[in-house]
Image: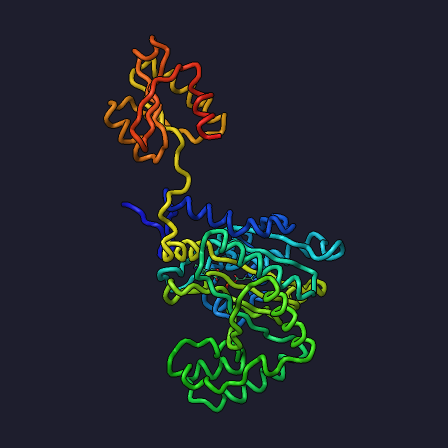
Length: 418
Ligand code: HAM
């Protein structure tokens, strides 16, 4: 019997896996530079954290959670997203009583039982950042700028920002009522009619053409914002323009999680087909209270690592090989192998990326391995070279070969990469 990765999952294998690491690093770098501290929470939580936090009527909670009973009879869910866990941890550690905002970033695996297709997986990775306990348009704008800078740091040019405001608990009920009234007058199937009563905003996100064609005149949330929400949104937009971040106002932007208030946004890439959202986020002023905590107005985002790698591929950015070797060492003979082993260890301690040929292969196979490694230099040492006290250093781009004293190999190579 042989096994395959479960449906909707895949393995990150070298060299492509290097890009996943590079993406995590680049997407989190701007947040780290902006005072966001690293948080790591468990990969599973009490199921109720997500049903309350993400929302009972969302697709995530009704259809997509990996939920099971553990051996102690508790209902446990593999995290489908990171925000509820971060808020839970911040409340549990009493941080709302200390200096605010609490700024945190994270990176890890998330699990959703979704219909698997390219860019939509059942196990995927996100980098996220959250600023908790701050109600300031500058904080919303800061987070958006950090995400924009993260994508730019990877060389991505075609990530677009969609921006909206979903209002607050003051103005949302009136909009919700207006939307419900409009939707009730449409020709929709029974499950959709039920959704109008439970979660009318989600109907706006229905992708079916026969539904979309009826939504052209749907009331827009931005026409129903209260004065405070309007002013807040204007300030966020102004700050973004001040730092040169361009965005598209999208009054129909509805996110798949129920906790959002005011600012919401999504980053989309047009080279990805149906799964075009490479990241998203927004403000969630009521989430803390929804899970039993104190009032804690907050804002954050999560950027998809898997889809960001696909976006880089679509822009032709995966050509250069990340994480290649500086030196590949080729020992020829038993004695030489021992000496090479030590030289390799010394070179690595000196900070160089170094690999060597294993298994006593012939020179031809070893040189092929050196080429495959992408190394700049091959360091070749035979038993006879040992007697002469010199190794051969071959520049693999020019094929030029020079003899260097074994005692000076480390310094010479260090010099070439300093
Ligand atoms: P989300 O929009 O559900 O938001 O996910 C954020 C990003 O994760 C998406 O834009 C997408 O790139 C990636 N993603 C989501 N589901 C999948 C999947 N099945 N396969 C591959 N990639 C996926 C959140 O998770 C919120 N917690 C974001 C947030 C943080 N809001 C406030 N703070």
